[in-house]
Structures are given as structure tokens and as C-alpha cells.
Length: 266
Length: 263
Ligand SMILES: Nc1ncnc2c1ncn2[C@@H]1O[C@H](COP(=O)(O)OP(=O)(O)O)[C@@H](O)[C@H]1O
Ligand SMILES: [Mg+2]
Image 1 (cartoon, rainbow over the protein chains, first blue to last red):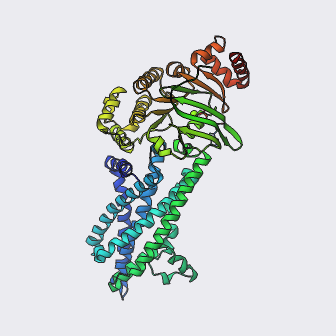
Image 2: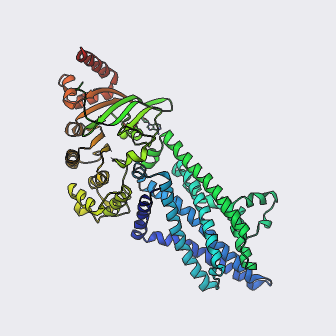
Image 3: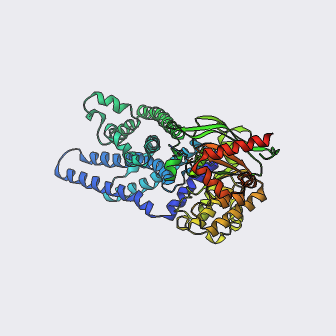
């Protein structure tokens, strides 16, 4: 892994964001809309019911912000790749001395940058509008973020592999990849709410589930579960390995079929 | 055939074959490219030129055959080889939403060019496009964009350069400029160039040696002069048309000529 190559590939995206601020708008617009909807909804429910609602607000807003970490990381990876397809630059990169690992590392870097921007905006808004301080989660936020980001990277590689295999026709599918798992990773409700019960074991096999369960635990009891953290890290390693292999396999298949240049120059 | 070349072999294909759905886009294609040589790959649309180049760049895997650059096997030493090579094609472009200097800087860093800004200035000047430095890449004309692509291709002072139809879509004037600049940089740096084209002017002016491809097979090979001589005074253009329409006939003529020469 050559850091110079990785940073050069990231530099290309930095130039892109500096040159077209509209891209930054896209990073901020949807999360803000989401935040408003979830915020108003929880406030409305709170006013019209009695019970343990302040906590539920916290759950939902926290879950929403953390879910965006996965989503943004996945998008960062997929968009970095698609940006090269759209601008017919993919061949220039693939005939340059760039290893697959370096190419992927750069897309991960772009994912990280996108997360930082989105999360910063969301956290400030949540604090201002709903007095929800995401930093109440304290230092536990960092391991949560890291785990979710890595899950997002893995999903991003799978999205990219889909595009490599089925071309640009698969683009919309590629965007939807994180939402395939969203119902199962217990973002807004505990694993115990997932029915039928056998689906719960599927849920527990996905790394983000342990992060969201862990987040709720911190918010309700103040205790950070090292066990859940351990599960998330372990499963993420497995997921990265699987997603990375799928990507590498698709890349080889595309070379074998001679399609790399076909869809890179269309 | 011309006398054997004693210069170092930079690029070599041995019986390169590539099938697509049972059809051979390249059929036992073999050649050697020497240091400082410009080799033209000529042929009609669909002859297999791009397929050959893609295999040589590792973008497409061959069905069979061997590929070597700088004496190294391509698949095993791809990154090492690509560091010493570069590529430009009429069918790719640099990201249109970046400025020219930004694109060149990104690639200079990828290739690990020393003093990148100085090198970029040098190349822009050489291509006579210094004034385009701060322009948006996507808004350049075809001719300007071709020259920017060539700047990218020369960034790392490649010892091996592959150009896929660099003059396609250029008007005769710009095409002429591009040919001259390619030839000049090539002479200065003594790099080896594999140059595909279906433009006769390209071949006459730029290439030291030509390989005619037809349906993935070599049907004729030699210097532009030799080819014209062998075709009994017909122009390269005539030869091209004959090959494109009926590769087999010229094939036979070439075989006959080759036989005569070997006697
Ligand atoms: N990915 C592919 N799948 C199927 N056929 C292909 C593919 N790439 C090239 N071909 C076929 O291979 C032949 C050679 O194409 P190509 O190398 O692009 O020709 P040229 O560059 O000389 O015009 C053509 O018949 C083309 O249709
Ligand atoms: Mg071609």
C-alpha cells in the first residue's frame, strides 16, 4: 500500500468538492430533511402520549445520526468509483500504477470525509432544534462511529461490485444496498422486536446490530458494553474480508470478460 | 521483412489470443516493440487493435498467450510495469469537472513524479497549451483535450507509451500538430510507442514500422515504405482498403512476398 497513491486519489475528490459546492449541498440536504422529519415526529408523539418519551427521542435521533454514518460511508465508496465511471476516467486510473487495495483505500478515505461533514451538521442541528446532544454518548461515540463506518465501507464495496458486474444499469440498486439490511440491523428498535424469531439470529450476524444495541444501552444505562463492541469489530472484519473478496472477484471477472474498458468508455 | 532489430525489447506479445463468445478478436498475435521504436497497429474498425492494447495494459485478460514488458511477465509485475508506461486514448478523458492543472497534478502524484509542478509546466509548454492550465477540463475542444491527455501520458517520462487512436475526432490541422508533438517528444525521450490508428497520415508520419491487423491476425508487417513497395506502388491507403475489404487476398500476396524474400 502506497500512501502517496492513496492521497493522490483522495486529492482528486477534494478538488471536485472544492470546485462544485453543489456536492456539499447534497451531503447536507437529505440528512437535514431526515432530521427534521424524525425530530418533529418524535416531538408530536411525545406531546400526545405519556410515558418514557424523552428517552425515545434520544433513541430515534441517535439512531438516525448513527445510521447516516453507515449510509454516508457506503455512498462515499460507491460515488468515488462512479465518479470515475461518469467522467470516463476509470481507464486512466486502472492503467496507472494503482493497486486495487490503494484504489479501495482512497474510496474509504472519501467515505470518511463525507461522514465527518454530514455528522457535524446533523449533530449541531439536533442540539439546536431538539436539545439532543449526540456527544452525550461521550467517548463511546468513537467506537460506534468507527464500526459503522467500516460496515458502510463493506456495503460500498458490494455496491461497487454490483456496478462492475451489471454496469450502470445497477446504479440505483447500488444506492439501495444499505437499505436491504436496515430492517435487520435494529436501528430504531431492539433486536427483540424483530419477528419471526429466527430472523433475530440473522440480525445478530450483522455488525451494525451490535452497535445500535450498544448505543441504546449507553443511552439508557450509561454502560458501554465491551461484549457488543467485540462482536461488532469481529463481524466487521469478516464483512470487510467478504466484501473485499467479492469486489476483487468482480474486477477479475470484468477483466476476463473484457468489459472493463467497455463500460469505462461508454 | 526488415533486418532484425538489435535494440532492447520493451514489449512483447507471444501468440496472444482473445476470444469473445467464440469469435477471435485476436488470433495468435505476436510482435516485439523495441526501445525508441514507434510501432503502428493498423486495421479497420473491429480488426482487434483496441483489444490488443487492452490486453497489453492488463485491462482485458487474454484467452491465451504470453505478454511481457521490460522482460517481465505482465500479469505478475503489472504495477512495476505500469510505473514505467503510460496510455492515452481518444475514448477516455480526464475528469471534466476539474481544472487542467488539478487533473495533471493528481496524476503526477499517482505516478510519483518529482517536482510535479515543474514537470506539468514543461509539458503544457511542449504541447503549446500553457494557456489552458486554469481551464475546466470538460469545456475543452477535442483537440485541446487530446493534448491535455497527452500531457498526462508523458508525465512520468514513460519508456513505453500506448496511444489508442490519439488523432481520432481531430481536424486535419490539430491532428497534424498532435502527430508532430508526439514524434518530437518520442525522439527526445527515446520511448517506445505502440500507436493504433486507422489514419494513414498517422502511420506515414509517426510510425517506424507497421502491423496490419485483419480479424485479429497480422496480414502484413514492415516499414511504411516496404509496404507500399510490396503492394506494387499502391498507396498505404489502397493497401488499407484492400485489406479491410478482403484480408485473405492481401494475406496471400504477403505470403508470396515473404516467400520470395526468404529465398
Ligand atoms: N468486451 C467485448 N465483448 C464482445 N466482443 C468484443 C468485446 N470487445 C471487443 N469485441 C469484439 O472484438 C473485435 C475487435 O474489436 P476492437 O479490438 O475494439 O477493434 P478495433 O479497435 O480494431 O476497432 C470486434 O469484433 C468487437 O466487436
Ligand atoms: Mg479501437
